[in-house]
Image 1 (tube, one colour):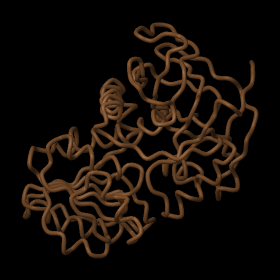
Image 2: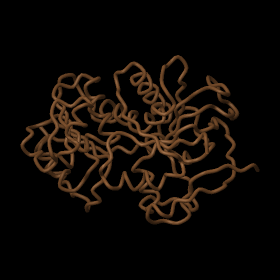
Image 3: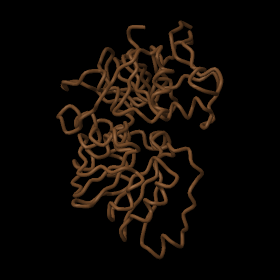
Image 4: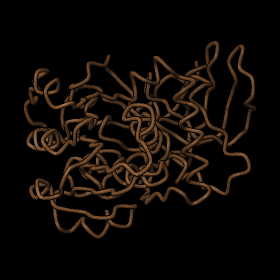
Amino acid sequence: MDGMKAITIPEFGSADVLRLDEVELPEPGPGQVSIDVAYAGANFAEILYRQGVVDVPLPFVPGIEVSGRVRALGPGVEGLRVGQSVAALTIVDSGGYAEVVTTSADLVAPLDGYDLGLGIAAALPSNSTTAFLVLDRVARIEPGESVLVHAAAGGVGSQLGQAARSLGAGRVVGTVGSSAKIETAKAFGYDEVVLREQVAEAGRFDVVVDMVGGTARRASLDLLAPMGRMVVMGNASGAEDVGISADELWFTNKTVSGFNLAAFSAAFPAEAGRALNRAVAAAASGELRVQVESLRLEQAAQAHRRIESGRTTGKLVLEVERI
């Protein structure tokens, strides 16, 4: 089988383990497409793969989202064509840090008719899709409700504030880990941005989205209004799990839900694909703004270090097509 270039995780560890390798070229199976990758998004999820937090077979090619052009169609695929520009979720089997990737046709969004560059398109499948699914499908946000989002200046946080506004939220507040990120977060649709340690002073909320964990998670539960919903979708702090009493939820009329895009996309690919198409349309219309910085694929380790440092804002993508 022909080969291609890809970033691999040959062993679990720090960003230094990432390696540019020659691997087998994948072919699409039934219901799948293969994509010539232009850009691959860089995400915290790929760091978890690299660290061994998520048990994956080694060597492993990370990469949960891409943009590019359809290379080939597997049996039974309709509605897509070879050469078509697309954005795609590759989160179920990963593999986006490569020249070619395969994924379910349900998880592919055509870019036809949209004035949307491939660099920006690669930043949408994970974070922007997640933002709409978390707020609409999981939290079931109602017009006028108040929303609190942790890590508001990050990749998914930057999208959640804007999606909340798009879905009719009233007050939208974000938290950040440092004062240097406050102005950046404010540009992403937030009415207010506060330091995370000051969140107790922010008031009550109908919806809280927490991808930080630790003390932020406990504080978030305390900030929920009656009938409030907290959605847990990460633990970027690396803190110990926070125990939540079912009796407390019962007595206070509160709800805690979890959301994992990989598991959701595997179980409900068509619904994930519809949310991706919605995100693409929102970005193309200007309803969603995405701040993107591009690095080369061989700089994947640098991208991981920057994400792990907690100092990034917006989205990092890796340019693949001109390796």
